[in-house]
Image (tube, rainbow, N blue to C red; front, side, top):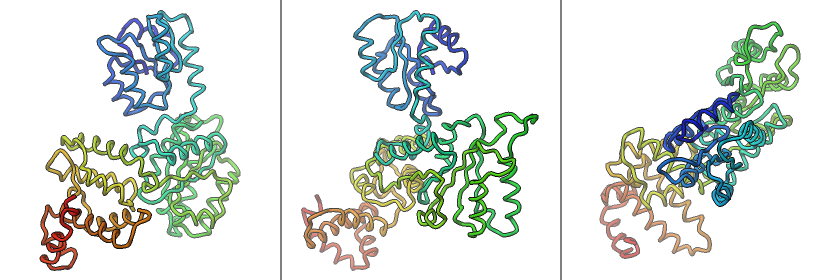
Amino acid sequence: MLIGDDPKTSAAVKEELSGYEVEAVSKAEAAADAIGKKAPALIVFDLDLKGVDPLQVFRQISLLAPQVKFIMLSSSGSIPLAVSATRLGAADFLRKPLQPKQLKTSVEENILKVESLWAPIMIDWLQGESPKIKKMLDDIRNSLSSHNRMILLGERGIEKGELVGLIHANSLKKKRKMQALDLASFRRENLEAHFWSTLQEIMAEPEISSLRSEEDLCGTLYLENLESLEDHFIFSILNFLKERKGKVDKEILTVFGIYDRSFIQKVKIQEYALVEIPFLRERKEDLPYLLSHYLKKYSTKLNKPIRGISSELLNFVSSYDYPGNYKELETLVEQAVLSTASEVIELRDLPLGFRDIADALMNKIFRTRNFKLQNAKNEFEKNLYRALLSKTEEDVAAAARFLDIPRTTLAERIETLGQDFLN
């Protein structure tokens, strides 16, 4: 990507990088939109932008594409400017007018040194900076450099297919296509023959005289729900992919999506690189990133001016365990944006029952260390009543019905809690 508003510079860059696909944009907003759809392999940034602070624009764009390297261009020979650009993270700083092959050499050097995956910015649930996510991406990078077989281990509610798309986009055979098979659809005995014919067609070694182009071949094969099959079928598939005898394309990357860790131990898959996908409850520190992303996504989609969420709701989402993982969080935010009548989403806007709220509050209480039993009881009671009244829009009778106690009893208890309850 080239960011710059000088037509002469744009023409010179495109000419010098004629062997590359160059997308030129003249404004920061256009660059942000393009990066949101597909992050580039490298960004050439012309600091001679008119009417804006170019270093401020650079900061904004680099936040959207933290893995992408930048090459800075400037007609100024200012040393402080070059130092500032370097300190902000520029991979190279080149003075205009460019010398022959100068830019191409810099681009080649920086693309060859690329060690990051570009696509995470495109996947909703990868928003965030938690150690768990960073480790997963490091494991993928290491696996791609040393294996052609991979297992993605993660719970339900995690869209593994998106992650396989990321893996394929950064694999050696990314010019080929990715193909996916849901093995659960081949469970019946009379469908095994159909599976083998399908697999052999996908993995057939291309003939030298074949008219099929590289783009028609399979580069990555994703197999999901292996654990749903009978044992004999499972081991037949694993042996076939391990041995790849006969006219089978040995360059295809095979990826299994597995939900149960004990299954991996049962079938003893040793030659596959294991990549563990963190559950949402393991990376609560990423909730602000995820919530911000989903709020922006659905407020735009539903055309509703949402500014944020209440502190009460933030307190709840930090305690909830998300049995449905990222898909559940996304659905909760979408439904809350759809149902709210204000610019700030409240706890009552979440499509959750009283039982879910009570469970989240229990989680919060029991994660607190060094508490006395009576203090824990009082804290839980106050939080529960606050949550129930928020959910019922201050309807004491509805909250009492959920608790299966008389309305007067609940009202008296709230009055007893007094100022502590109001706080």
